[in-house]
Amino acid sequence: MMPSKTTQTPGRRRGIFITLEGIEGSGKTTQLARLSKFLREEGYRVVETREPGGTPLAERIRGVMLNIPPATPSEHLIRHPAEPITSECEAALVFAARAQHVTHVIQPALQDGAIVLCDRFFDSTLAYQGYARGVNLRTLSILNRFATRGVTPHLTLLFDLPVERGLARRRRHDAEQNRLDRETRQFHTRVRKGFLALAAKEPRRLKVIDAKPDPDRIAADVMAVVNTFLRKARTS
Image (cartoon, rainbow, N blue to C red; front, top):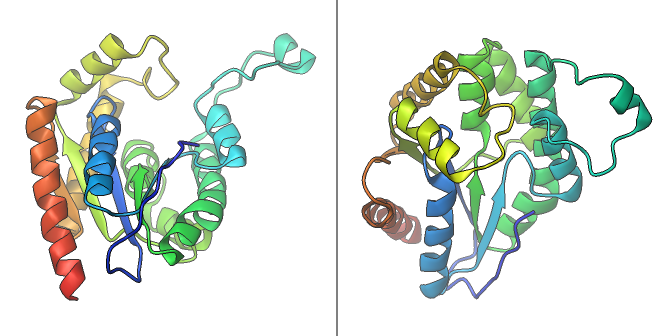
């Protein structure tokens, strides 16, 4: 679970839930840190978190889902190699982690008037398990409502760039590749198409950010979108 520093939220009674989405290597994690710093400098209280994960139990589920080896593997796991995770199991793990995350981190922070910045949320579930894996989108939506009790993002930033560039960034900056990083290019292409399809369906919530320029330019675009959203939120 990522630590969070907090400051007072000026003039706000309701929290704001902002999610950051994108394919592997899109730079969303870097931009989340920049956005958090900017908002804190503006006096907002900010909580940073991620999915799958965000609580001790949810982080353990993340390790299972991404095939991250446990710190002390059991004798059973040593004797038997890792079994393939089915698409349905993968989705169930995501929702199990999300239920913990929403209940213990996101909802309390929103009730306390904070801005919650989350690295991935339900749009990733639709893109990865739905569009890329082929799990029924309506089923995923029903399960998500059950896991989140209806909590949804107020604003989503979708960092978009070609799959080849994203995967190249991951190979360059991350020595350890997880199970999703090792998926085929075709899989990641379906993920990107899924994200763009979701943005086309919900243009008011999902704002597409061009993730090809340098990080400073991307950060400026992010700040512009978030500032516009916050101005509207203050007057609503």
